[in-house]
Amino acid sequence: MLARWPAPGRCKSRLVPGVGRARAAAIQARLTQHGLAAAAQARRAMAPGADGRGTGLELVLATSGLGPRAAVRWGSLLGVDRVVEQGKGSLGLRMQRQILRGCREGAAAVVLIGSDLPELAAEDLLEAFRALEHTALVLGPAGDGGYWLIGRRRATPQVFTGIDWGSDRVLAQTLRLALQTGLGTALLAERHDLDRPADLAHWR
Image 1 (cartoon, helix red, strand yellow):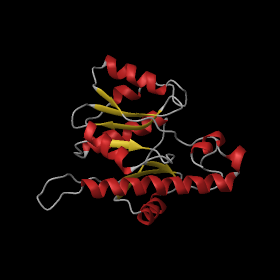
Image 2: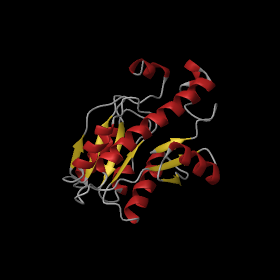
Image 3: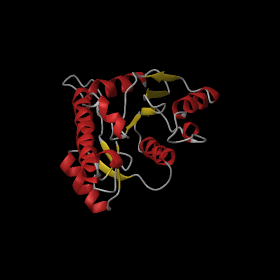
């Protein structure tokens, strides 16, 4: 999960005009906890059984907005397996960095989500990992024209370049790049993320 530290005035800035800094930060904190709870449930479902079948899922929190020591403390409170830094750059560069990191460390598949998904369920994540057993790329379409999840079996710099991040063309541009580079792609169900005051209607 990519997540920003939920401090008032430092996260969910597009929510602030509608709800204020303090509530925007509280929403960020609650959504982060919700997403990680769904991921933890998926991790339990994927844990190896007594017969040795099943795979282990490592829950990694990629943070921004706080220092390394504070990030580790935050991750410990949230119950993640590991904390890493997102690093600088565009959203695409930061996501690419996490997928490259996972692939470099030997992960069979890497699935990325953000911390703004009130509709996220463990089954969504399990479906993404199941899809990656048969295809190279999986995307979760978002209602705003972007995507709420991206998963990859191998490093995929191609699908992060030339994207108009923050626009309603992100998903279409990503699918076009995947087609051009010959990446088989699976799509999950559409979900709504929560970025603007109007998005709260999907959460109430």
